[in-house]
Image (tube, rainbow, N blue to C red; front, side, top):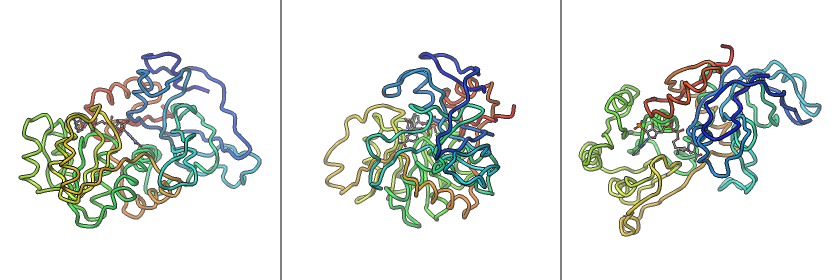
Length: 333
Ligand SMILES: NC(=O)c1ccc[n+]([C@@H]2O[C@H](COP(=O)([O-])OP(=O)(O)OC[C@H]3O[C@@H](n4cnc5c(N)ncnc54)[C@H](OP(=O)(O)O)[C@@H]3O)[C@@H](O)[C@H]2O)c1
């Protein structure tokens, strides 16, 4: 079969001939119709993801059709349209993943391929409201946004929420999910155009984090925030402590801006803030996220679609930071 196999650091994404994946007795073979990029694919290509090793077929998001099943899996699943849960080996504790937890696409081979073999428990019926491309686009970011907002962030209807860096895949999904439950959502972005796009999706407003006064301007616009969902960290994280409401929650899921710097402890303890981390989610959360998407008829925001053999163009689009929403790969050309 053909797949995007990375064999060394910083190599451009290219389709190569590789052997077919081997399905376990409890596994299914999925012919992938679509996959999608996440920021981790870029970190793996650049060799900056923890313990990166090559060769690897990257890609965490995928949707397609079950082509074959292992001997312990019912043959009635053959021909089903499915979406793949990229969160593997979570374990029994819903509070945190176990040590051998992995995200599909490293260290296990991922979805930028014609076929993938995965344990049957990680494939779920594709929500009927979504195309294959949309289903691939929602998998990892939907799970991450769902756990960050609801399990960790305990979002309640009509709370005021801030989502930072709205151009990102997780961020725009968090915006859609928070709006679906009636929250009042504000955003930040490095681009005024992206703030305008977020407003057209239902955000109440936003400020540009490249200006010196973004945090003060945001407070003038929105007051203070009950819940902040942040994938940036970096030097601006300290400002989030200012814009959080007393007793507020800040859920961090990423660090596109690097280490948290100069955070003032008194801001945290005096304001009774909760600083929470969130990563991916459990199998139950993945299933609940798909039901949520179906119930609220949510369509993921797709920035652009490339064919599998144009994957490097897709990677460059994501690496440029110009995207608003998900960069998707269509596998049928
Ligand atoms: N913990 C988990 O389970 C999990 C899951 C998914 C992703 N992540 C991590 O979360 C981060 C985002 O991932 P993604 O795939 O959603 O990224 P993405 O689609 O590549 O987008 C990255 C976004 O970061 C935003 N950004 C850059 N500088 C910022 C700043 N100073 N303040 C606020 N936002 C800033 C940009 O927003 P604008 O374009 O609007 O400026 C950009 O769109 C990455 O670090 C990724 O590894 C973690």
